[in-house]
Length: 301
Image 1 (cartoon, rainbow, N blue to C red):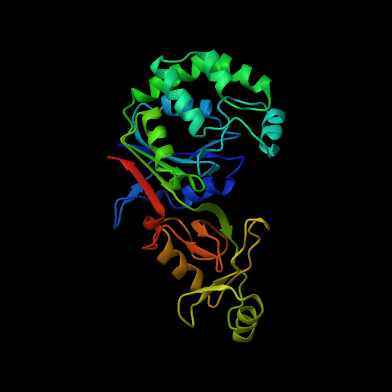
Image 2: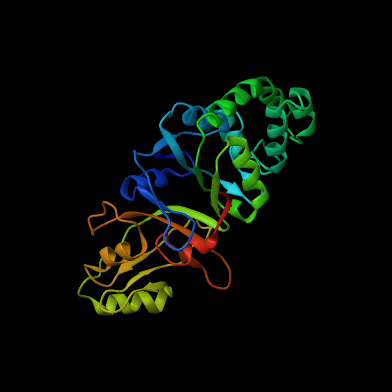
């Protein structure tokens, strides 16, 4: 069974590079589930549910999908229908209600596909500020239904969702599983991060590494003389990170320990994927860490 990765390249550009470099993803069940990705990732700018379904429907040999987008504790933060760049920008900046694939929309789509409600019920039930958005979605609902049924006919096995916090809602994952007809859905419970580490070399300068540890109080991984350190970062600053390896080999050792087998040369910048938990201490958990799968929720199967 072939596996593909589909990435919202507007909101998660580093995820494309990540899966190009490390073409597999850690999944449940414990202890060592690893899903190999068979093709280069498919980037979709301003990805909507319509785009996602259209892409899956064209992949006749695919039975597993990995998707990367924004999410929250009730669903996927993606538009239901395709939006033009200016429309998408307005949608993305809206801090109030917006058309997303949350639990309300999931339930309504399931009912609509089953034929128990029509377009008017869908439009009058969803509480959106922009009535024009409601009318546009109502117009495209028949196309969405057609695509949903086509995707269901593919008989997906695994849908691996990488979107923030959606794994904290098993009910939402169950709705999404039923919507696409997948056997299993797997997603993170915490903040899901794709980015990059750009190490600043201080090789042969133990005083510089010690100064970095003292001044920045970074997270430190590994043992001397090959420690790898980075500042914790936070969501408010956009994860502007300082990254310092203690030795020339420290980056390669760090990547080999925390990420699946990939194409990293061992030197220079590399893409990263982690589940990040915020609290008194910021904790980073990478795909090959034992704790990674403890932060995932799986439904179905």
